[in-house]
Length: 388
Image (cartoon, rainbow, N blue to C red; front, side, top):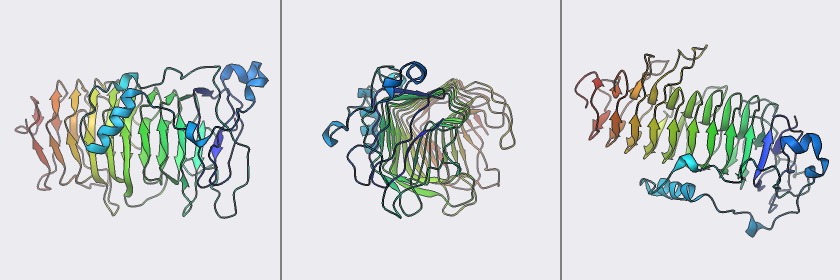
């Protein structure tokens, strides 16, 4: 599998209504810096084996044609994230585009070109290796982040690592994508800022449906994402719906997170600056009771709603968190959990949430004397007692 890659700085990758699966033989594509449209060949599992004509790229789309409208639910969630309000009428469960999975649609594509020396990114996955096992790989380099990349209205499925993986990007938008049954992550990003992951659906991936991190495979303080947004996505059947690892200045709003082993992990550690200054607002985190066995990094996971571990100054507000039950160390509705390097949560606020029918408790764990506030929630059971 030669994954689709976007290497140069200031390219604009646009993919519309295309299915990309691990069975495909997709062609790598790159574009000159500043090009209006740099895409990939239209490929489907069927066309890869039976229809060589389908591998022909469509003509380059004008810049004005590239901003395809998002699903209404995604648009409202995106707007809500920017204002800090609940997305009115958002139904993230229907956020995947109607055209996803189409075997006949095409993508806009520009001829391959070599970027000027010093501006081209290397084709590297977020894990730091090559793009093997990743469906769509978007990679800049340190000091030369790839900008202006949009990936929309397509399906990526069955890849060994990431459905979509990105590193060293600025302003990456992933909208209306369906990322199913990939070995590790549906959609993942590291070392990047100002991303918008809006109106996507990620199901049955081996690790997280959506994964954002400062860096993968090395230590470091939290990354300021400069206002990244994860909004209006539907995440189910994964090990974890959303994982935020060592990040700051990010909003998670209006997502539907259900049927995973854990809903959300918000993760920090001893690094400086500390992870935090995040907003988790207006999400539905329900019935995450799938069982995931222990591995070398984590004990077994089941029934975890929103887990805060080693983070600060994070707001968890106006979420519906129900039916997350289990007997693991991280089971429950909202769980304050010491990081594995024993860094406490501090100065976080959990307020005005609906927390019901979670177990062993709706609110569990507590980092004493570290300024965390729990107020105005609708809940029945807390451990320790007295928080509901």
